[in-house]
Image 1 (cartoon, chains in turn green, orange):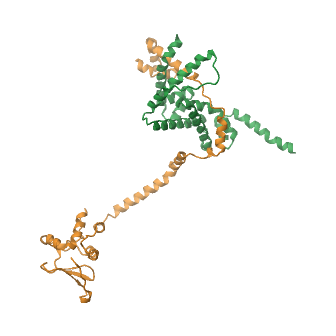
Image 2 (cartoon, chains in turn cyan, green):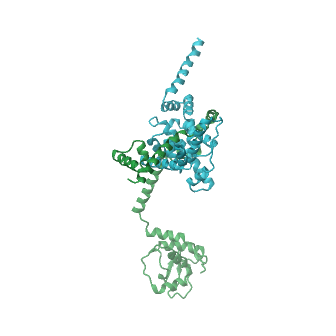
Image 3 (cartoon, helix red, strand yellow):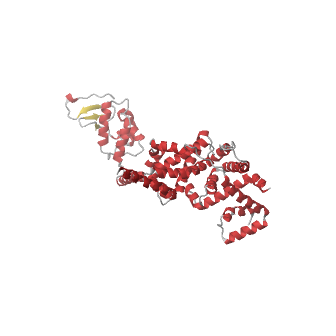
Length: 214
Length: 233
């Protein structure tokens, strides 16, 4: 009798865990809104690296980026019941992340007494923040790692409004429509900003692109 | 097509978003312009390089820290800004905005239908003017009541106005109040228009004499000597 009772709840739990792996983000979020902690953990595991990367592309402070990423998930949890399944979860969470990052940049500009956001970013980007990797890189990966650093540095030097568009599109791989929704700008503006950002990026990476060709 | 307009189409070209005409123009330009052709290659390579950006991973205790914050109740507590934003949502503000608009409309309608009368304006002007320091307070307060209620249809004698006003300092404050008020007040009588007797209150009246040479005296309406009142001018 008692063994039957003990066995019953284990099976649905195991099935639920399997279900989350196969469910879409929107379905998992729906379960999270119904109060499932496991669903929330699944979303954290799926998105934490993407959110952390996104925030890091905008602010040059790893510790602060982690705090902001945690805040993003806290807001997701806090507003879980307000989420509408009709919209994509990735768009929703990226919008929260971009908004929080923009707030952070604004507060930094205010505290520094700088009036131009881009000027502040240009200034800070010159310091060349690096993200140290704990593992030593093998020789064959060294070149790729260096190029990656150069691309990250070039991205940081692009004005903010162009950078946010190109990061969402080319780094995060979102569609033009999603980028437009996140940044609240029309499709035509998204396209022109992304094209402009890519041209700027190309100009900044030109020395390294020429070397690669040789 | 020049190089500048060709560059503006690079993204759309790579993502196959150009129409046939634009694509044909760009392709012919790329074939003829070596600079743009090289630029397009660099453009494409720089987009590809965005994919090799080093990943920045979260710390190992990221998830545990987050869940600890949620369990502590932080996840359920809105921040001050979030709370304020919740207060000023359209749904919350709309009833107040509608009520304010309605009250404003009622006020405007009231003032349009009941414009301020001259009598009200004179009362406001009289109330807003301070009583003269040299005039006795009893006279001033009683004079105020009499003047406001006296008829305005009496003829004005311009020749006597200045002299009378000068000789009766008790009226000076009335003149000042009329001057101070920008509203033309016909209910406040001209002090020089009366030469003989003037009621101060229901109980007393002012005697100045016909020629104005004798000192003015206050006489009780009843005529009884026991009701004498002395006022210093």
